[in-house]
Length: 260
Image 1 (cartoon, rainbow, N blue to C red):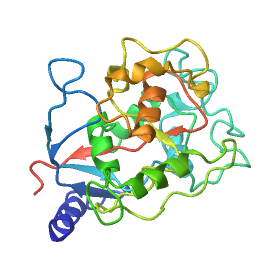
Image 2 (cartoon, one colour; image 1 turned 90 degrees about the vertical axis):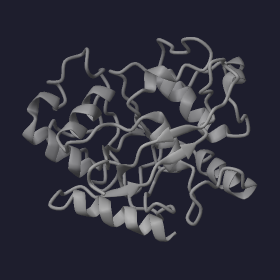
Image 3 (cartoon, rainbow, N blue to C red; image 1 turned 45 degrees about the horizontal axis):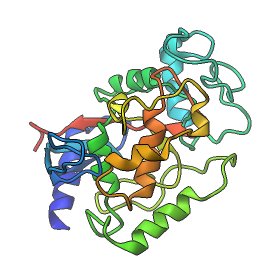
């Protein structure tokens, strides 16, 4: 784990003076559950460049500060083509979260466009799917725990929790990279969400919260035991960029090249 500590320190150095807490990930060869080869059933490792990722998802308090400085992203002012009717609908006022929202909980009901705009204020961007999947493959001690049946069961147990409950605060136990809350708290936007079509264009025009998803779409998944990851892909591929849901948040990433 020594090399991980080196990347964490490097990320801290390159983000010194920034309010957000980013942690460095070394990148390297990674095999996704999604096909990367020239045919739909082919799997090929990809090379990921080092990058820094927010340690936790963006919180309600952080997004409230963002909309104060950028009023164009307040509820009721964001154009409908950039945010649907449910955008920040739980907030009591355009600048104030609702009484039932913890300010240290992850912000949800945020569109891809709004999430992207927030990240840009931190000289960052939304992670790609491969970056998110790479970070989420780690458990507390291993950088890739995906082959461990116990780890799979733990992740699935998180996803089996009943919905509709108030979100907890960010800052759960970190994984081997020092990143928290990749599982078990909220779903998360990725930059290339609309390129994750599992079997053709699987997006629907209905409520994305319903997760309407045809099981035959799973045929293009390389590792069909990765049900938790499959559910995320199903959700993300059902969305449009202006969509919002009460369980979908985001975090940002930055490149690490030139900072090591």
